[in-house]
Image (cartoon, rainbow, N blue to C red; front, side):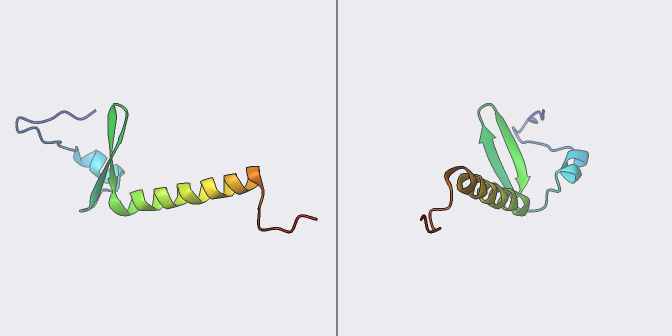
Length: 70
C-alpha cells in the first residue's frame, strides 16, 4: 500500500523502486481495486510471454488446425 502525499502524488519507497526494477518509463496497470506500477520493458515482456503461453495452451486444448487430418 502506498499513500498519497499532500499534493496527491504517489511516492514509491526506494526499496520498492529497486525491487520492482523501475526505470524512467513506467506503465500503470489497473485491476479492480489496485494499480500495478511496472517498468515499461518488463511489462511488455510479461504481456508477450502471457500471449505466447496462451497461444500454446489454446493449441494444446484445441489442436493444431494446420495439420492434415486423415
